[in-house]
Length: 420
Ligand code: HAM
Image (cartoon, rainbow, N blue to C red; front, top):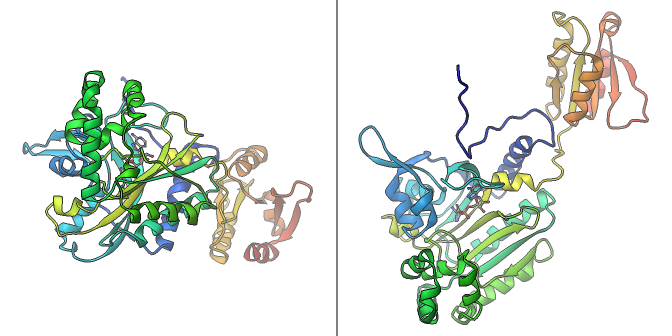
């Protein structure tokens, strides 16, 4: 029979214990990012993968690439048009409105798969994971500092190098309108040189022209008016203050041409990029979206959020050694011999901070030690026929090649393990 393959741009991830493997890095990234979210006292929100397609048309905007060409939408058996979520913000707001919680403040986080029908390439998939936060119900100010602080904490946690955060301010309603008018006026004489996509952007959401991939458009834009001339002094000082406060942790660059790919943004926006990523260099993005709740039928709920592209982020991590020690437990006895498994059980209950990898396969000592080294074990506990007979175990110090292995009694093994 023919084999069935996974769909284009949709990857399987499997933890084989090898810390160089991208899947292992992805799982570790998710675990540690969740910890940062909960340490900042954010609460989890989990929404369905499938939503009414109108949710995304109304939020991301019908001029966005996400809605125009990337959305996975189809009719269900009841002819209702539904879509796999391309992002998490709209669903979070929909859920809060539906629960009638849109008059209170919230600090939320989520982690899950998103789907976009994009041309797959390195760092760009059709199913990918986002870890995001949404801060709902707070006006501009504190949440902007909090969210950049969180981005910096995540960058610090993973010791990321070669990255920077670009920030911009899209202005309040009035400044945005004035800027868009000026941009339209400036581009008017160049209309014949713009491609169809940029012309559509110009009519539906002029700001998006700044994000054009067309080289000719970009060269025309070189002399275009800058949003810097239109935003309020308070917006300029927000950008400068954020840059000054966090510059010592991560390079922060004010980029007045930064606009985001979704229509719901207003005010402060940002993206984190890394020169190690290649063409798809943005591993995180977000910003303020004060009008989304009203647009989705809810109350006025000024909000800001961000989402991390987990696959891209994980590919940047060099070292995923965890704070929890890993120990490998290797038996060289017949695998029907029950005693060693009971010893492993007792060790686990003595010290739950240790990750104990009991290798279940037969195999030689050499191959078991190779596996122990691969999964970053600091120690190997070895029990063979001889040790079983004598009531002992061997401790091998994988973290210190110069140190000789030791044969200890089971009682000594227990106190060694407890002290780790
Ligand atoms: P976004 O910029 O569209 O924002 O996506 C956030 C991150 O998801 C990107 O920076 C990138 O790392 C990752 N990403 C996007 N598309 C793909 C793809 N096809 N393959 C792999 N990774 C991808 C949002 O989605 C907003 N909801 C963020 C937000 C939250 N804004 C406010 N709150």
